[in-house]
Length: 255
Ligand code: PGA
Image 1 (tube, helix red, strand yellow):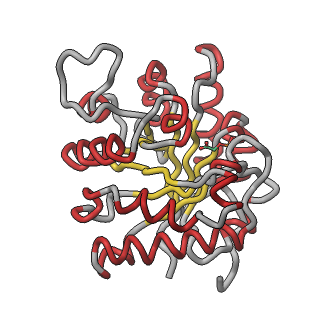
Image 2 (cartoon, rainbow, N blue to C red; image 1 turned 180 degrees about the horizontal axis):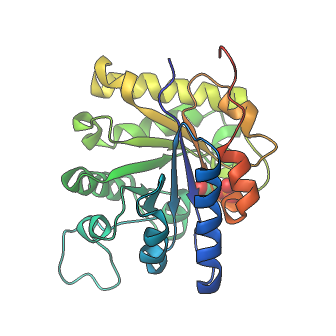
C-alpha cells in the first residue's frame, strides 16, 4: 500500500505582500470545500511565514519553510534557525534544493548538517536530490543520487519524519517534466538505497516525492507511479486553481 501522499507548494522568492493572503486563503478554502486525503504544505518566503501560518491555523493546510540554518543560534547574520521555524508554526522545511546547491554553493555536507538540526527540533526535512541534464545524458543519474543520499549520514537515524524529493534539475522551471517512467525508476532506486542505509523497517514509512514542472496536466500520471508519494510544486503553486487541481489529483482506482 502507498504511503499517505503529500503535496508541497514551494513559492520560492514569490509572491508580494498583497498577493500572499489571497493565495494562501484560496488554497485553504479549496481544501475545506473538498475532502483531501493527503497532506498539503505551503512553503512561503520567511517574511510571510506568520501571515500564511495564520491562514493555516486550525485547518488542514500545513506550513513549511524553504531553507534553514544548521546552527542553533548566535552570530549568523541573515540566517534562521530550526527552533525559530518551529516557533513560527512550521512542520516542514525544504533543504538542499538545487537552486541553493547551484546558486548559493550548498554542499552535500551542509545539507547533512541541516538535516541533523531538523531532527533535533522535530521539523520534517524535505531533502532534495537530483541530477543535471549532462549527468543524465552521461548516464550518471543513479550514481549522483547515490552519492547525495550516502552523504546524509543523519538518514541512519531518521524516522518516518523525513521526506526525500527527487528533483531532476533539468526539469525544474523548464516545462520539461520527467516522464513517469523516468521518475519511477529513480524513486524506486531511492527507496532501495534509503532502505539499505536505514534498515528495512523504515523503507515502508518513507515518502519520496517528485518535483520539476508538475502541472495540472501531468499530475494524474505522475501520481499513478508506485514509488511516487507526492509532489513538490514550484510555479504551479502560485496559481490557486492550478494548485488545487494538483492537490485534487485523480487517484487511480485499485492502483
Ligand atoms: P517547478 O519547480 O515546479 O517550477 O519546476 C519545482 C521546484 O523547484 O521545487
